[in-house]
Image (cartoon, rainbow, N blue to C red; front, side):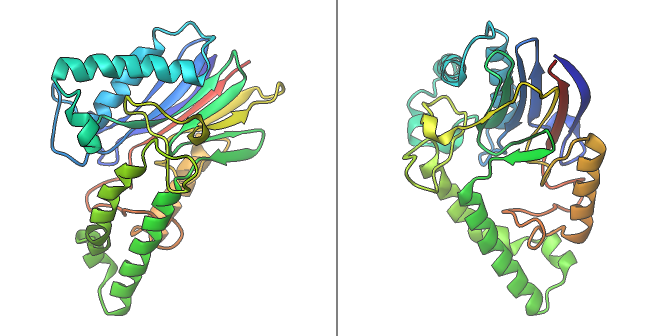
Length: 276
């Protein structure tokens, strides 16, 4: 497999703070979205999201290419187990899941001709976009949108709300509770998958079959509202959204908007791969 287009950018513009990553060999193409930390802990100078990205990349380096998604999760979780043991966090992460270095990831397996989505991510091939949006984020994003649109009606300006996102502050206690739904009961529409060292119910992992005629596939993190066949199209769509809806309350409803001084809403990675 060969990369045709690749772009990775930090939301702040400072790549040393980027929590996204990618991996490519002859067997797997992977885009990883390390989750933004809600604690102030650093490990060897790395954020929890950066550490999760490194763990996943290290795990893929050990695979032979025939593994399915459950095998892959098992190998990744073994890496996590070693990490938690070395840091003395084995018990703490069970009681405080927000301390877990966590990530979403999207994997293309050449051997299995499948894409596996764990958490928020997306892919594009044969003119079709496939996304895996967390319903719980949709719910909280709508609540934040209602709150901020109410502030605008009352006279607040967009600039004031970009400087002080009162909507996010109001939903923050709710977001902290969403950890209760990580890798839990798949019958709940609020449950979602995340890579954090713990078992993931198979029902929470989205699988997309890749037809034999597909030659090129694009994988991306959710730093793009949506992706297209080319990086240029995907970047243009993002730039348009940033211009028309920096608060992320209308065209791109989300749990957070554009922080002043940042170049985008979130870290982003786009990787277009020739698979044949």
